[in-house]
Image 1: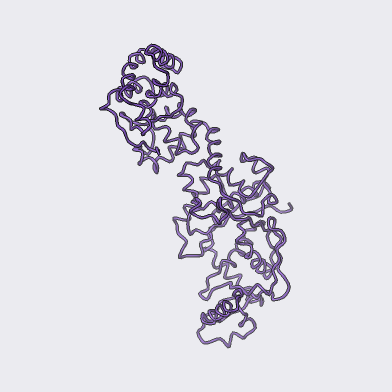
Image 2: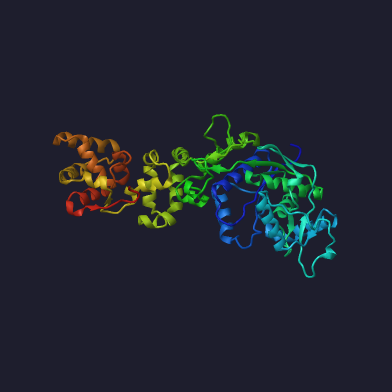
Length: 486
């Protein structure tokens, strides 16, 4: 590469950062990092009616949570409107643009004629060579590009290959509206040029825009950036990804309990491949990423695969990190579970101690939080239906009889506790499961949990005995649907 690579992510702040936008940002970030370049962030907020501060905040927060940093300050497109108008006026002065006084009625008549004849709507160029002095008095014109009417416009795309448009099929696009505001087409070209963007990596729904924008670049005598138009993401059924497929904002994936590292890894494999490798560290992604490995077919979003990948990264994460990330979710997830916005030091310590067993089963942080219910629950525990079924009168009697033997265990650790429970089962002629399963239900409120004796060791002597006491008599039981239970 002869010049420093400069990429940009340029979202419109009309909603949250969706999954497709996040992947586009990731690809720009990876390509810039791969070649030692920079990635810029530009908020394309020229649609003043739909752009909101809340959406801008969601985009910036979503990128930050995902771990995608940008270089320099955020650029806001609307603030550059004067520069966009300056370029339009220069095109006008050089004869590369002209004032068009076509009325809304005339434009509607063109649309109607196009519909009748079954052809795409194109402006017919009626003001291309007319003298502006002949315009109706007081009429406010738009400024249109004097696009070439013959020949062809070619886009050499890193993903799509060589794409050709006949210039006769591309009409004179509007650069400035009648109120003097710049159009998206003009603003994007001016901003990308002024920001020295070398590679425009974006969705293939912008491919036709690349042809029109190429014409603006050439009219200004500017160099055209390199293009890479990546296919959109589809749902598992092959249809365009929508909310029914789970096309949620990045903030929603965070609330669902996904780790940023897992989401980054999953997104990079949506449309990009590197042999059969599925698991990538950030360093591996940066070292391997290139535009030529992006396929032309739409990628299919697979929620189950994302969950599986997230489970992998949860098992790789340290216990302290998982507890911290769960705690980050408490302000939104805690109220429904009767939890405060943060854990007490005691609960935090128990969670870290129990995490090795908990994270083997869970695929999301939300599952992890619900599986850890027994660690932060208060006595008497709320039993899920299966746990309640295990605690019949016979089982409660066994728990009452087991309690003194457990209380006499001096070393409250996994091996001595297991030995005590096994000895009790043998002495009473019960199977181990007839003792262990009700004990698990009494201690956790669930029919499944990490290893029972690990659970007991983490909870501690006093808490275990209190929970056994609470479930040893039928009147003390609280039988409901526990948080996260089906």
